[in-house]
Length: 516
Image: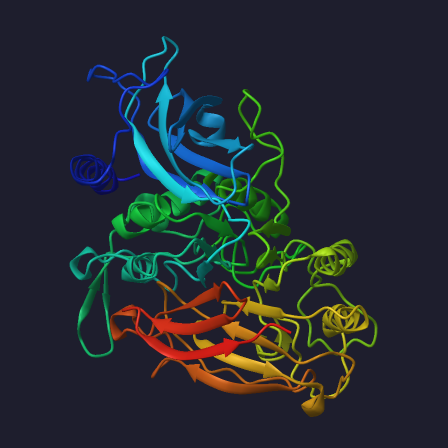
């Protein structure tokens, strides 16, 4: 990190410590530490993630080696959990997986690192509520695309304001549907916009070039956490994180070898993706296989997963990158992979087993939007051919047919990726492929990146564009206000209200969906 980045980090921490971090008072094991030189500071705020009815994951990053300690408080109940050591092997990040939590309860988790002598450093509090068994309501927000196309943290404009707007809706959780960073998008200190205004980025060493080394990938994630809006939201709103392409490089697939001359140290995508995956996992509060262990390091987390949010809602997160076949025109008569056989089987099985009223499938790529990768090839599953499913479309056709065959109702798809927002209704009466029940797909993003769109639609599954909001010009600056997120709320009776909103939080479009 550059001197500028270090200076901002310290200043932000001082502001948070003075203005908002709540100490939880005396209790077992977390008596106030002496303020001495060399204490372990929290460099990047605190986070929680994958919060269900009875479990959660907590996250923090230390300024030097230390053991993560969590003081978990709910009402009169208090317990202290000592987690793993944070070392250079995990970029000084650490997580604690909490289980045995009570449904429908508010929790305050005070996080700190202790040194080898048991001295505790700086403390910050993360707050969340577990999913209730009989919720009066539940809500969440989703979006994607953070700090892309060279548009980074502009402190003159208040930083990443989209995160503040999402936070102000007071959601129960946040789904980041991919492109959590832009490892392939270098930033410069100043960008002259088409109207002559100057966009001024905060710049650190790691974001000044494409990420190739593990340090550079880590630096991209740490950059986003320099923003006070992001840190405030993550301390208060649990995240469900996914990844897409820009965590590694644009439109990648396994086995690809880059021809991009900006990559001077490493052009094997498999090598880059392994480093990207490690950094992503270190910085995301995702439940790791060894998060409860006291040693450092984590087994690779499976990105596709189900997060249970009580009787009204199950969230199914997809991974449309790890198992993906090469980008082609997409016209193969045989099935090619975007999910892979194992994930297809998992999705059908787990959605079928779900007893929740609503099944929300969060996909890191859209279903019916054409996303080109050059003049011929396709990045997503759509192929511009309006006929019967071909290539990667065949996997989604299998999923949709299975949902119909098993009588699965109340399935909604959400996504980001394309840098505009839209509401799509899919119906077999308009489609070349007809073996499925009608459903909705809602698109929302970017939250802090260049705005584009609208894209061409592929007619194979019969989409109708009911609403869209997009850029006036390609790669429009966030200053224009065309930054988007989605908001969903389920009431006691199961009514699902989905709205698409802009960077101010204003509702652009809304739809009520009654459960079947």
